[in-house]
Length: 145
Image 1 (tube, rainbow, N blue to C red):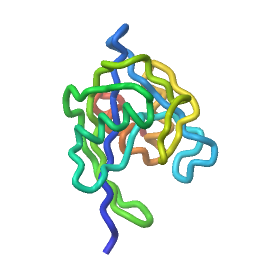
Image 2: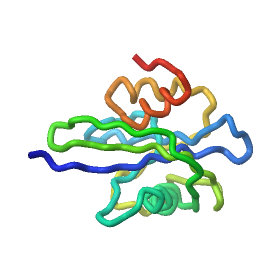
Image 3: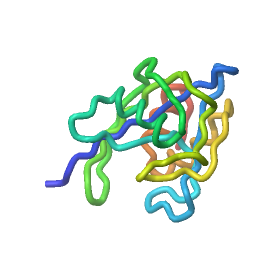
């Protein structure tokens, strides 16, 4: 039986423009989605609540403080070596401007970031199997296929 992994992705809203969300770019050597733009995410640690995992995205991946606002959606997928259950959570920025460049994560270290209101940037990742991108696009009524 495959192991089940739980993950959280942050739909971080730009405090200066509520139609913009933060997208991050995965590194070229990323094993699942190289060079693809998507939402910042982490695997949920054992005994960790989803909202605490979201806060950890802020600290470890974005070098700032973020707080959960609301549930966006959840999906599951079979991966080659595990089952993935992923939840998108809408978040607000309460700390300084996010910076993937200052990140101290032991997980995927993103190589770029930007605020976007053109959500079509998520279509490539969604087409390659990114659950967080699929959840986000579907929540906006945007087809990704």
